[in-house]
Image (tube, rainbow, N blue to C red; front, side, top):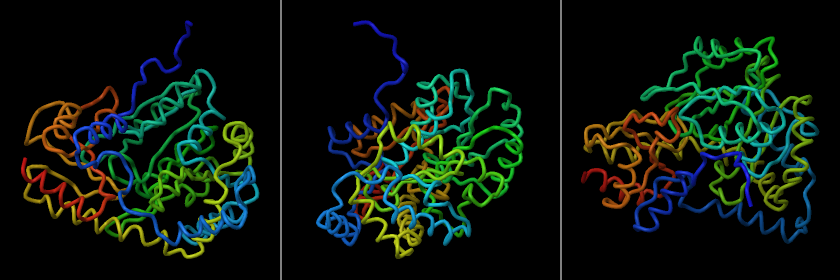
Length: 380
């Protein structure tokens, strides 16, 4: 059989590569972004309760109403704005499915989509497979600041969408209020859709504030927000997330969603809806992960790795330039094979694989795991 690949340059993801390498060499895995500690037993028990209560058939296409209402209440609680659970919230199979569906719904052949690099690796393939053209704006270590004049210069009649990720994976920074106001300004009175990936919204440190797109009225009118319960509640394997947006945009999203996955896991939706009735189950996450970040950074303060404390997410970027001038992909592999510690090289997320000699480490791990990883870093 002969065929033409829609993604000819896409290979196995760096997450799979590094996790497989970690397993092969019995290394501590701080590469892929998942916790190695249990989800709250109360939440697990609520899933079992939902199963035993009969929630084992198809969920409503938009998602269980109780969960959509809980999400709506969360937006009101955190941001004093909300989304209508009847037509502005859809439960999805993780944030990645929501992102792919948004892009598939609106991007036509030749449309341009602006995104910021280093960028999470699901954005660009989704644009390409739908015939769109990614327009990358490179952000640079260590501060990853956006040059909004440059962004504005890239906008033309073909610009259909701008994708932002705040808090940002992989670099652990956040968009400021000023950033969001600039985004609101340059998209005002345009047909540009904004996709705001906010899966780490509950993990912001040092008294900083997550600036959700929903806080800015004109921006909210053109923005989809995607989020992940898997990241929030330490159960990435459940693959449950959601998408919020204005009614007129969600109407088109729903058309594609219903033929993509139709609906997602029912008992977990029922369980999370009840679990969210206690807001502390998500508002306490910043404290939890800041403690882990601080533990990790304090433990490696005498190492040769340089760092600026992560502002958000559960990732910490470390500069290894005083150790070697190796390419970051090669060094990440050698660190795994020779030292028994797996991390993610940032160049794979950069425009033209820009190598700034930095690696990303996930600190969503037990304290014991983090301290053992620190011993390795200190020995180098």
